[in-house]
Image (tube, rainbow, N blue to C red; front, side, top):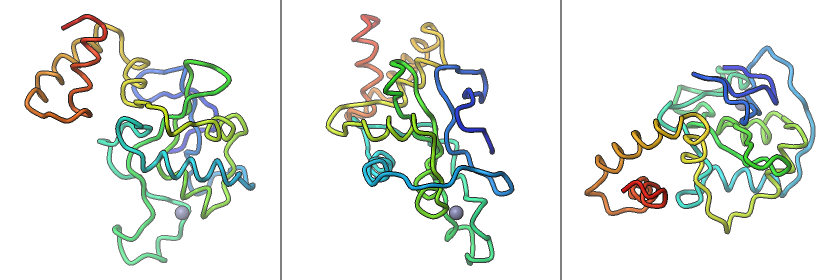
Amino acid sequence: MRYADLSDYVRVNPISKIKNIGWLESGFEYEFGAVSDLALRNLREIGRASYPRLYTFNRMRGYHYCSICAVEKFSGEADRPKGNGEILVPDKTNLGSYFAAPALIVHYVENHAYCPPDEFVRSVECIDLACEFDAEIAFDALRLTHEQMVKLYKSFADQYREIDQPEYSKYRRWLEAHRLL
Ligand SMILES: [Zn+2]
């Protein structure tokens, strides 16, 4: 998978409020440079953070392997640098807009001197990990119509009815907040 930095996010349907960042692929040029310690630390943190500070989404799509690292360096798939899903970063200058990057972006910055565009780096530096964030709900709100989202969340709320954990009951709470339950 290779998407140019700052291109519109298109997987199924185009989502102009999300810009692609950091989809590096061997054979394609990319920007080199240093990234601030703060940005790198926040990138690492948001990759690991979990609900209710959830910056990762599309995890069910599975692993994405680094194609820039020489495959011969590793003894098998298990050793190869890989990331699961994507991270969603709120754009600090355009409220309601986001950047989406592969989870592997931390590896690209640390091991391949990749320097993402300034607007992305500044937005990552501004992330406050004390605040709650839900990348899955933010992403659904952009990719689905309101009616589709209601239908999907009603089915999730039903499916996860018996699971008493906030990351599962969040669909019911979203419906309640929208006065749909
Ligand atoms: Zn690599």
